[in-house]
Length: 240
Image (cartoon, rainbow, N blue to C red; front, top):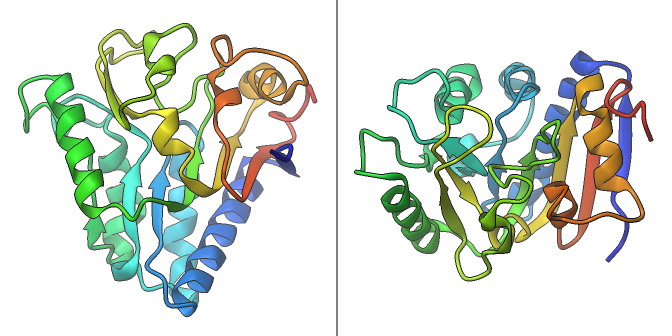
């Protein structure tokens, strides 16, 4: 497997604009080739700026958002209107504005009794509506090296017979989450890790180091089938 590509931008604003532009190009190209692309969005500190840029740039492109199937890499198991929900943030920032209609949110605590039931329900959605491959999966990376809600040392890292898992003891609040496993995340043609700020620099360096473990740095366990790219600003790249 080829080493990840690294693309560095001057600051967070330039990073968000570049990633949004690259995603829109990929979606337009896929649709022009007759495909209905499926993507997985990210949460995290850079996501709101990225999503705002998608809303701003989309009207000038050929992307038909009604023909894009949208998923999330993870979400918080909280009420549907909780501001911590990744899905709510993305809808407010761009999905509603661009007219996306094929949007698959992870269940909220309003929908099902517990986080395990939520994971099972979302897994059924993926089996029913998924294509077997994502055009692009976008992920943030935590200061501890986690991606989606796959945290260092947690048992979900070793799950290989599920594509969605429940998390009950997230080290950052809220504790209950739903997450794709490596088996799902790595069904991406292109997997993008997006990071901004000095607080992410150590984790980025650990993820890209020649040696290290997935147990300590879960980001080391994700990759695309065609390419893997780290989109960084200068601060996040400062320890490379």
